[in-house]
Image (tube, rainbow, N blue to C red; front, side, top):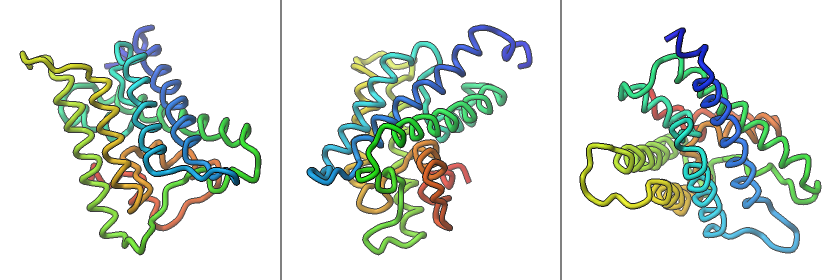
Length: 213
């Protein structure tokens, strides 16, 4: 495993996870900003997150595998698809990428539109227990879609894995936004929380880390 870390291919893959997560978070959070003249709709936010991840998977998937999500990376490790060190480096790169993406968005957004930078939060009287169940279901369907659409043992016509994954994220957002803001991705929740210094006792729920417990 140590030899793997020292290769250019590995370092390029780690950097790709950082870069793609940064771009994904920038566009995703950017779609959810509360501009005074036009509040975003749930459909707009859902499509933006879905299109952003689909674009990143299509663009960078061949380099790193297109995780851009600690929950996905951990799932691949549990499934014996990647090494422990790759999992560790990917997660660090994803979290740093999310902070960078949220930080850039914060810097270019007027103060009257920043709000909480689309940081996740429990809403509509959703309890922590209910949020855990919702995030488990949302993340499960996403990881299931990723494994199914990228399984090289399939002989049927799969179509575009990038599009399938993007639609899976869109699906999760369309429902999850009403409960938790729809995380499915610990990095997506971590980035704006760090930039806005907005950590709460329920952050562990909406960050999606419960999925690996």
